Length: 305
Image (tube, rainbow, N blue to C red):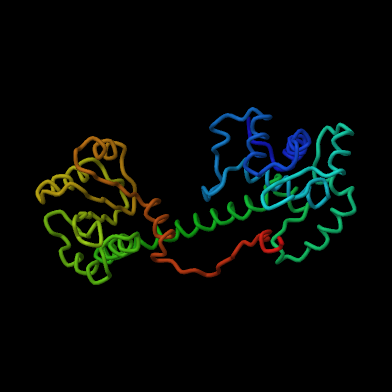
């Protein structure tokens, strides 16, 4: 089954709390709702694009948040939900569903949402939520962030396709350095001087002490990289008595190349154009930050006695 939207989860959340003796912690509430819906293990583990939170946990939390605005639920303490008298009365009426239209009948909800009409408030109004197929505000933000990154990744690949091959090798070393390889900047700069050494485009320290090194092949190609190119790289590693290498390209790898890389004793990591662009965005190479948005939540501990 598809994971229900946060609106579709309102009634299951209210029922789960109605059956509870006292408050229920958010993680436990998510588990009870998932059990009631008989979600599979795969569905329970499905995460938002950021990977930081599961979809069911996020939607359950937002279902609770909206119902809290109507006075159906309350937080007895941080992260712990409890049903209110209004919530029990609504349950007693045996509603077929609970959604934003249901909540709009409560004056408290209308008043709360009216105060959230400020576009900088970070809260999605009911009408806006309906237009986004019932996505939670968190899902909307992460989806927009993902789309922006996809656009940036496409532009990065176009830029790299036009780069001078030597500058592309420099870019690869910059990325590996940003990822924590190469010790300090001076050491990372030195490895590029060994470029084009018998099939090796770069050498960079795996750790800050230089106890091990990684050999790098960087190909600014338009066509797909096949097995023969990866095989030649593995041969170059063997010639250096090396065990680890990274083959990076602006294009992609043929299936026979990935199969070959996984079959050899050497540890060879293949990074295609899309993953390369994603890593550049993640580690801030070739991109700049236009704006940083900090997502806030109330610190309940601050207001406790």
